[in-house]
Length: 77
Image (cartoon, rainbow, N blue to C red; front, side, top):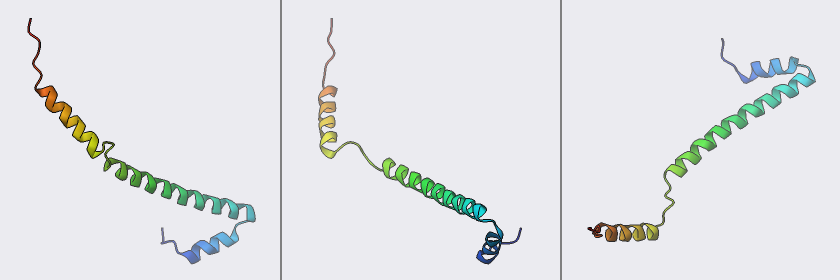
């Protein structure tokens, strides 16, 4: 298949009936939206994977609790 140029595309587009032009335009918009959606999902995933849902204060509290739990002695019977 030869490379697609804007001129070749425009020539073919001009030969289409009006309804087909609208369909072709709608399809191009669909492809562009699909491309944007994929890109956004990747960006969101990267952003979310780098985020922590714990604040520094939350982590300090958990570390404090862990230290105290490590000092617990089990009950003996």
